[in-house]
Image (cartoon, rainbow over all chains, first blue to last red; front, side, top):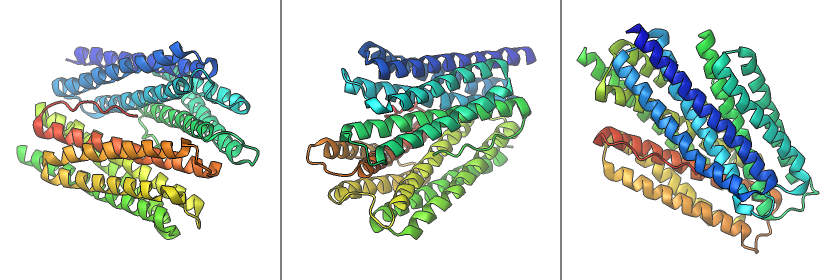
Length: 219
Length: 219
């Protein structure tokens, strides 16, 4: 029985890793779609999000089956419930990457990001991609230094998000309403991506240390 | 054993009803804070969100305990897992009401909603409050006509959300960047509130009918 359970847990872990790999690719390509105005890249991110959703459903079904058939208690039970929550966050991260690509697609063949905010969004993109990469690594290695680094990536995303508002409200902003809308939404998508990343990192840390993750304050 | 389980399930249901009641109050007061520019109302929504978060944690702990001690299978198990998901959605709805109140607070003593969009946001507010009210009712009565009505409320929210973009991009828009940002974010908060409401309604319908809820496409 224990052997079956261990094998099932391993499959759960692999499912999360697969989701994370897809999220990592999605946010990377979403960033490319913003900077390159390559319509095909944006379309790919949007289409591929369905694969992330499918993985989430599969993983959730596996969790429920595991609860029913193995009746785990104590730590084992917490692992399964935590996996359910991590998959929900990863699914949302996939959605947010898709939203970014949808903004890029909506502005094609122009850039969605105004010229003088290119640098800020390049930094947001870099932080988000790095965070996604670290989540994948954290899932495999359980190295808690990565969880701390993910919190730092999220802090940077929050700070860059603030910078976009400063730019929009600074008095020298002369963008169109469409540009203001795009910057507002893109900034929010990246910021939320970071929040979910932190949520995932804290849940993994909880699995490793057994200590309750401080609940993530969503902004 | 069965009696204990039934009592536990009843407590779970009551926990969800309590969360839903608080969400209903939060979105109602958030709407008031937008139209009245009453700072105290905005502050109350923001402060009260902690109570919703606390209820979510409590309910989640209860679910995990129930899984561990009662080891439910089949339908019982699905009920518990679904309760976990509903509480997560209700918690997010509370966050979104808080975000709306935070925008209202940020603009105090001015109105966050520009004059000529007052009517559109009043309609969004009405739809969101109605939807929240219907969720509370649905949790108690399990009347699936309410689930259908909630989908209609969400469709209306989506359509009103589109209207805000039409207003911003219509050419006659002469608002400031701050106003454009506020309208963009408020519109998104209401739209997401509707999405989560539909998600809750579909999960309750699933509990009633046993049929899998069509997964909510998040916008």
